[in-house]
Length: 203
Image (cartoon, rainbow, N blue to C red):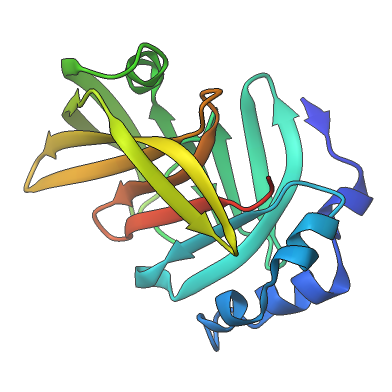
């Protein structure tokens, strides 16, 4: 695991302050962030939003373990992403402990159009016992879509992953840049937390 230097976690005082304000005023960040501030950041930036947790925060890379990058907010909440697909959360409550996303990544890398593949999500219950939730998913073939992000329009391909699990039908959305990297996602974290939207702000 490669640890990102501390200077990378403390991107700027302004961004840290904005993130710190997120629980009380979750929509302040979007109103105050500007493209020049984003472009001056010495590190890549994420913007994460989870309505069920009243979360809207900027995150910066904390460490890298192979293809998995863990991003951290000013409140020490973390998201671990494997090439943009969520594999774990910490500090949000009812956290996703781990996720098997190999089939999802294969579908995205091959351009979509995959059917009936499994996904396995892992959580802890109130007694600290491991709980598994299985999903059966389909990935569509994708379509062109434009992501407007703080005065910049990004041409992307939108893939929709439709999954069924016990008591729920969910959709995950992935907006991919032309080079296959992620620009924006909306991913289901769990039954208690619902969807998490993530946007890569840096160009």
